[in-house]
Amino acid sequence: MTEGAQPLEDAGVLAGVPDEFQRLWTPHRMAYIQAGPEPLREECPFCEAPKFPDAERLVVARGETAHVLLNLFPYNSGHLLVCPYRHIATYDQATAEEVAEIGALTQTAMRVLREVSRCDGFNLGMNQGAVAGAGVDAHLHQHVVPRWTSDANFFPIIAKTKALPQLLGEVREAVAAAWPESGS
Image (cartoon, rainbow, N blue to C red):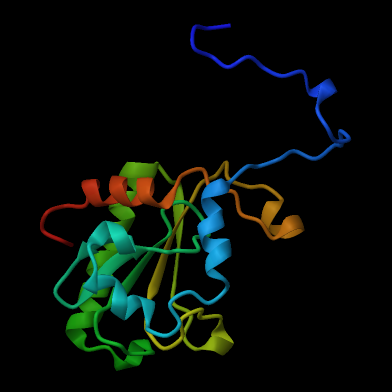
């Protein structure tokens, strides 16, 4: 045993019956569980986020007409959302300036995520309307989801669980630090 290390307990003397299941301990997720399924529903979370310090609301970068933040309920570590500041529901309501900046911020997000997380690919998309799967259907947002060749398992299919190897604050800090000064 190394100096300062805790001695391992003999699992044979602990309470419980051994089984074939592996345990994935994620105590940081308790904040989301306790918040319930509809956090910030009194106000639009994408309108509220820019009103607070970046780290508090997981904002990674701010542009002139749009901002980038981490998804509070990510599909993968580094799952970013690119949102216009203006509260609009669909892409066809965006101005030419908003469309251009959403595109530029999405490209920058991809470059930064490639650098920071060494991902192999991306899923990009906009779900517009509740019927199309939008969790926040009243505010337009583009998903930028990093993907890795080796990140395939049965958690999402069998247990409706996604294992996330990094805490949101750590991901936000790494992405924000790697974001170029020009913004896009």
